[in-house]
Length: 337
Image (cartoon, rainbow, N blue to C red):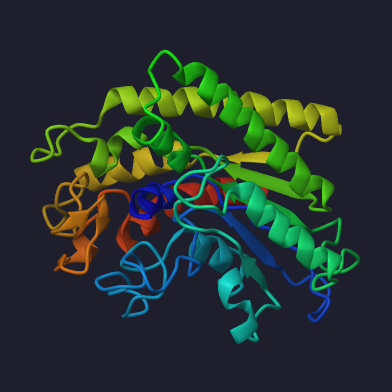
């Protein structure tokens, strides 16, 4: 069951990143703390089970499996590069790495705001961050400098997957579930801010209905599932209202920021559709054999550079490059720290 949770963990939505100055680094240098699912997990997924620590993951970057749910980079890597730093060390590897100066990645594939197939919910990940603050691993005076600290959050798709697959949730019950999920997420965002993070950036759900897993019949991959996209838009609209309320309550219109992953991914897919024939159908995954929606060890991905999706749930390195190109303008404005 963990496999099912992982694939959508890769999906969204949220990573929390905190940019700050380091106690063991120069004042003003960015620091990134990441929270969420497999769209931002760079190595916390267990190495002894199938998934991103097995081939063919990582064949584009760094050339071997390294815990990322793609053939290459994921959203975290692009955010870190935008900030001019290396991707932060995964939390599970913090004791074996000397590179914790630029932050840590708490994200765990398959996780959600609520419990899913894995135990490391967004709340648990924030607990881990808070514990490090209590242990003075990162001091608030320098590491969470109030003039530069930022948080970026990405989570949510595993919650919907778990609701429909494991809890057998009904369509009639979906509005109440969505409202409860957004309320929980808003509470998590506010908690991050109260821990001393100056700016909190939260990603929307992506275009769920365009993920290969949601496309029916599976052999055509011609059209996105509009019902799933509609559900994502409803979630995102409620999230936007929740963020607006958080800003109103905080008295600062820019403390909490929404990162529009939905439209960035939709625009990137359209761009692929209009590209020349070297690109395959963007809605078809590169991996030739998927088990519970993630690429299996027997799967082949002969030309990931011509694919938008690596497996049934995760963008390829090429896909993330295209998505980030549509996010960069808003980041230039919203992460001006």
